[in-house]
Structures are given as structure tokens and as C-alpha cells.
Image 1: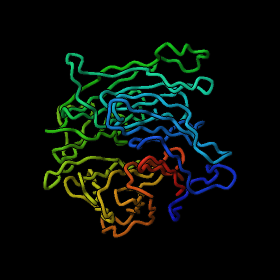
Image 2: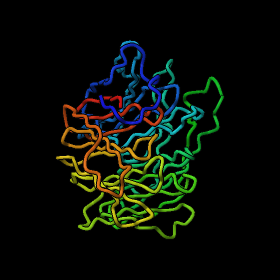
Image 3: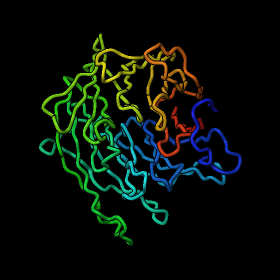
Image 4: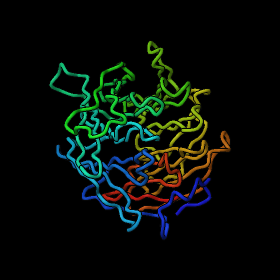
Length: 362
């Protein structure tokens, strides 16, 4: 599918023909999507529907490595479309098998074992209990260093950091599936921006637990430290104050992050050591960019996806010299609205367009 990117171990590929692309057709438009992190669930992903009504769905799919087909393992109802889906960042498989979704609230779900395919709601996290109204969540992030921390971003200008208690059920057998193992509490809520906050992401800097950044409708990127929340650092402001929709931290070098503005055909890379001045602009797309994801195993590779049907992989090693062209390109059969690079299997990228999800070997 794509080549010339540093390969990790190709033994990760399914046996047999080792196809380069596997495709799943969902019964609805796919909006959110993410890879499972557990080592024992290699080709498992969660997909969220985009249906313009209250009743939406989340589906867990897994690749049957013998038939080379994706199989829906479970489907459950979700109020409104999920703005983001993440699996617990548990690369060792020691925590309960949890999945989180954002929408009207942050919800944490426990995925059923193979003998009981049902997925059940473990907890609904709502920090606005005094009101009949909720401020929808635009995004969230799950801390990789401390999986008991999640951060949400909201249209009410705030970010909320949640503490999760997972009930110390590690190693217990015959767990009663009716007993909730997970609960959560607000660790802190802060007004992060002057307008709506559209994305939040934890940084791996300083131990990887306390630093996070957010972007929003005021056109700024702001960085926070949980140990010093009395002030924040503005890393970048869009010159025209165009809303910034997404941000993503480099997985290997926490000095770098990437963001993109609304309706923009380019994304910009920032260096926190040189605030306010982009170190690179990636601008080969011919329609607005919808998603960005850094390589999990390389500090100099990033993938962008856009309405021009293209997923592009870039090599940014030559920064601050201009990066003219991507090193790899894939053209899908529709506008790509979501892209995720598998952290446990860096040979694989997943994309979504229309009602399709594809995984592509890089």
C-alpha cells in the first residue's frame, strides 16, 4: 500500500496472503474510530456512527485473521454521535477492558469477554449536576502514563481533568458483570479558552502525566501543567483568529505538536521551545484537512487526511527547512474524516470515509 516508511516487525501482519488493505463496511456513516491497545487484541477497533438524531451506535470490530474479514463483535447504543472514541491505553493488558466515548457526556464502557459479547456502561461522568442542560464535549484524551486520568474539552470554554478509579479488580476471576468496577471524580475544571474548546491532548513531556494542551474557537493553542494551573502558556495564535479544531503531540519528541485550523488545507507543526512561530507547514492537500496522527514509533513521521480523499505521510526530518511533499500517499474512495495510527502495531494505519473503515499497511 505504502512503502519507504521505517518498518517495525512485519510479523505483526496476519498470516496467509498478508494483504495490504483490509476493509470493513459499517451500516452507517463512520465518524469516530480508534485502535484497541491491548496486546492480545491486535486487529480490534471501535467505530462510532454519525446519524443526525439522538440514537447512534458504537460497534467493536475485529479482523478474523483466517478469513481476512472484519467481524462485528458487539454493537451498542449511544446517545448522539460520539465525538471521539478511545480504548484504555493499556499496552500490558493489566487493566479492565475499557472503552471511553465523548458526546453529551464522557462515558466509560466495559467490553464483554468472548463468552458474553455485551458491552456495558461502567460510568457516566458529568460535572454539571446542577443543571438540566449539558455542554457537549468536543473531544477527550486518555493519559498514557496514568490511565486513571482523562481530560475532556467542551463548548463551554472549559477543560475537565477526571480521575478514574478502576476498582482494583485486576486478577479477580468470575467477576459479576452487573457490578460497576469504574467510578470517576473531577480532579480539576478550568476555563481554558475565551471560546469553545475543540480538542485536548496530554503531552509526554515532564514524565507524561501533568502536561496537556488544548485548541479552540479563539484560534489559540494553550499548554497547561496540572501542578501549576494558575497560569497557562499560549504556544500559538492563528493570525486571523480562525478556530483551531485538532491538535496532536509528537509521540517520540514532546517538543513538537501539530494543529490545524477550520477549513484549512494545511496543518502546522509547532515547537514549544519557539512559541508562536510554526516550524513547518504541510500543505499538499487540495481540500480541508480533517485528521492528523503522528507515528507512534518515529519522531519524524506524521499522517494527515482530508476531504480530497487522500491520506498523506510526511517525513519532517529536515525541519526547519520547508517540507515540500509527502513521502507516501493513499487515495481512498471518499472524503477521509478520521485517521488513526496503531500504537501497538505501527505498520498499520486506519482511515474512515463514508460508511467504510480501512486499515492500510505502511
